[in-house]
Image (cartoon, rainbow, N blue to C red):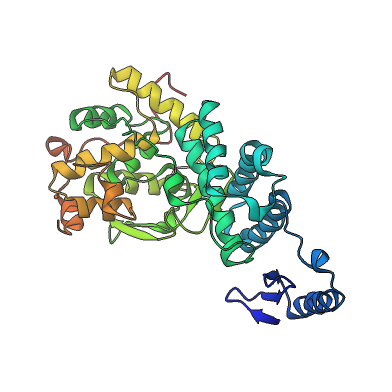
Length: 374
């Protein structure tokens, strides 16, 4: 019988019941934990074992878990992802496991959920998301709530997701695209993504305060989250990073800075106060590719194409990992097919247009834009 303070600052009340098993619950304050412990002690003295030990159903536990995790993460601007998790639980997990007692769920039962999703034709990626949700909430039932002794969403049940390589452009196609988008609405956005390998959310969140034109450095400090429509104060991977700006890109950034009317580097064509609309941007990129007769790519395809530029100028796998801020080389291998750290050197020698070192620059705000692309 005890009240224990946990590492997350909460308090756990626990007691051994009549058959020798131990039950526990987690509370926000010590006072609430002590109150519950006093109730359990009284019921134990009166022999009310079944009123003490009421294993929750998965629905009951999920409601408690979801509220607890949502409160902890409210400061991290992840409400969009939390909404997705709630939808996944209601659609895929609740119909099969909702009424089952939490302590009766086994790996075999978890596998049935995933098998049913496969039978319904759900994509492996969707199956993997639901598996991650179950592993997380059952893991917390073991570690934080101590309702379970082990996690039934064992690792061997994780669905295998085939890795699809994003379509990319080769070096000649990249040059064609860069020349073609000079002076067009989304020209500067495309130049930034190709030369720096930015994710679309990082591009949307890039501000002039993040761009040091004197020292030729760009700082990736935040991202824009489409699901919530808000900026988050860190990029994917929660690691801020900075890179040297290649000289050809520096010219265009300098020209754009001279006529900038807001804090965003690539705002919406509707106005400098609005975020670059990803839907319109993707549509325009597709249109530009069609006009040139090159493969259609999406915005993430621009990021993959960046590796073609850097590899052709001497970059290694480690260099690209640093540029893309990947968590491991295994992720980088999706972008390349070698070890060093000469990223700044590579950035300094990148020249896609050596014969046009002073190629006429037209600002990307739309002046002289004769394209039919929106």
